[in-house]
Length: 566
Ligand SMILES: [Zn+2]
Image 1 (tube, helix red, strand yellow):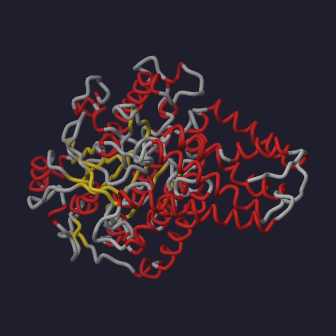
Image 2: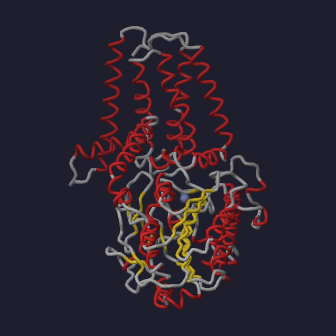
Image 3: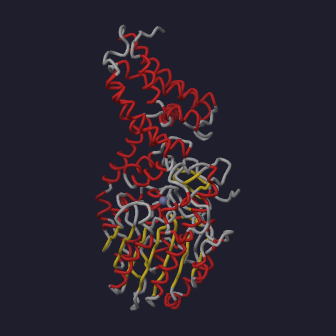
């Protein structure tokens, strides 16, 4: 093949390289879960990326071609950062997080690999400067356009076939139809090719919005028919705390080598559950599973159903939502909106002034009203990365910590110790927050109960794969094994002695976060016609979770082996 000579040829090569940075990154950095087929598969995908990248050049002029790609160059820092941290392409759930719940979270993550991002920013400037100033806006291929058009189309078809066949060959199950497998594999394939993966993600996000809006009428009309089993005259206060990024292992109350939870250890009437596993490793997938009857296997159920908070409301309780995160998340908004009062600390993920204790102002105000029947949900920032922004200086006990490092470049296995120290300090602070929250409820002298569950865990370079943070597409047990604490007041114990003894009996049973819905209603002695006692930790009929299913960030359901530890 003979390429026509262009005097701006060198610029075209350089700009092409910039567009393809995420693909080149993936070629070098992707883990073996992404490219099971080894080096040949890596090379194949790099080739396919290049072929697909070239395709628009057959019908766009040069400058237009690079300006169109410029949009993806602007988005590529997110993709590149995700590949750098997770060793895998971005998933739709993570992509949604970038734009929906927590832009602050993404920026915080990006700031931690600062030099890389600075380089990307410089590239943006360079890219658009060259694109606008140095390129002649002529046809890419000066002559014989049609010939090259055909060439491009054939290259595309060829690469698609190669990709599909290569992936199908080792994945095809005898019972499956070949075209279905091929289409499935094609989608999988395109998910590894930037920027086509972003187009697929965008489609998936839009489709989810449409699915949810289709269920809007069901949702509005939905009711549990919930009521208090035997109404009692005493004041009742229930508090549910959603923790963030909690590792079961790192609490000393659960046997950790460091004293990270001294206050909870001294808290009377507190039980720690030892075998609770989250069903997702990303906040906005995990929260609906905790609060509704949705599960990893039946995730979309929450589109048309309400939460246990709504069930409490049906049963005559005043309900409140307090949070310092996820205020833009559609599910959180929906749930908080239907309570009697929602309070959000103003800025998501803002470092150094958004500690969980700022939520006590709202809690105190609610408790001061002395309402007789109250449920309060507190959605905390817990141990969300960056860990050093989650606690005041007084809790900087385990050193050296991230507090002593500048903000840059801390996501690397060489900082495992510093990351772990800082993470442990955030647990020490969570201990302080939870124990004092319980203290506030205890002082009311009411029939009251408290439950804390973390939404998912965290990786701190525990395994050989050197995985860090959460929401990875290659999850480990550290993503899912989460702490759960249940506290009951003296008056609660007198009123519901059987429930309390069942709690003690069940505290080492293996369960998952899809048990929380039934359990928390049972904690408030609230019943409805479709209740499932076998999923309540306050019932003597509790059945252990035999297979643990997880919902991965690519929305695939997977049976996960939780018993393997080191
Ligand atoms: Zn989370």
